[in-house]
Image (cartoon, rainbow, N blue to C red):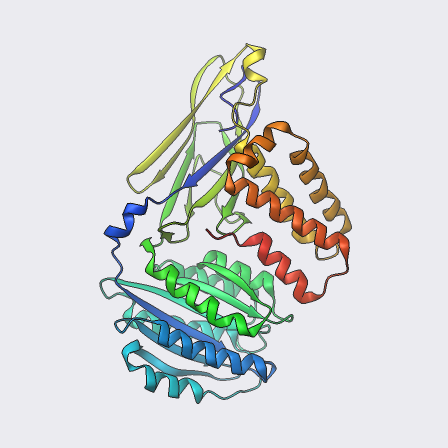
Length: 403
């Protein structure tokens, strides 16, 4: 929490950071022994050429990278949706690869049908003991056939996540809808990737396999509550994916936040803006966070002592909030909104001119990384007119924050 004291009988706004840091020892107790991947590949006409060739090669390399006990299914989608490989163990790699190389291109893009079929196939093994399941969606365009509304596509990813299955989205080239893929990944518990070079696909697929092998908690839920008459104002997920959590119900004193799977060696960070009600002098339990058997509580003191309530005791949550807000505004700026770009610059200058913030940046890799990416994004947006692919690359770099 950024302040230990607030002015008595006056409203106040406080920032609280929640850092989730898995212990390295948790790897010994990992409960998932096998991976179950459903790969949904866009085979519409726009994928022709190098993109399609590299997608096929990357899919084959994905199969080879899996352990023999892992499961994989492959779905192609264009005007028609086809199950190219029903769930099969990776030990049958040659047969799976032959089926993948037999995929042909079509015309339109039934994105909804592709992810729905991937969900059906991955579910065939997802209930087995020791299985961690994931859908990887690869597309270079926007939905043109079937159910094409963004709300429908985001909703099905949310439904999939309720069953503990992660949805990761990969956008290739300049023409796909990154807002849609970002939202799908957000509610699906995964990450969004911009694939500017199709030759990078094998590395991205390998990262997905590695992530699954490091999973220790699947589909965790963070419960956060504030004291009576206090109120959540803003909630940001900072890492591994920066986003403002707008779909979280904050009308009550308690909210439940679906987290991404917890991986050994990967932090998750959130920051909250909380409105504290006018209160007489005393000590108050401002906020409590619960995750499984872990619980943390923070207290605030209302006082008439100006020396105490005027001092910010821990600027880390403030820096995290300002940098997160500035980055979200920047993403509008790189789309051509000059007013938003100026707002992002103002947020950055505020952080850079604060001596307390400079101390935080030296001590916290999370805060330093967030501010660094904000600065890099602003510099790039100011230097030149961005191509669509450059714009997407900057958005990915300012949104996705790994270990």
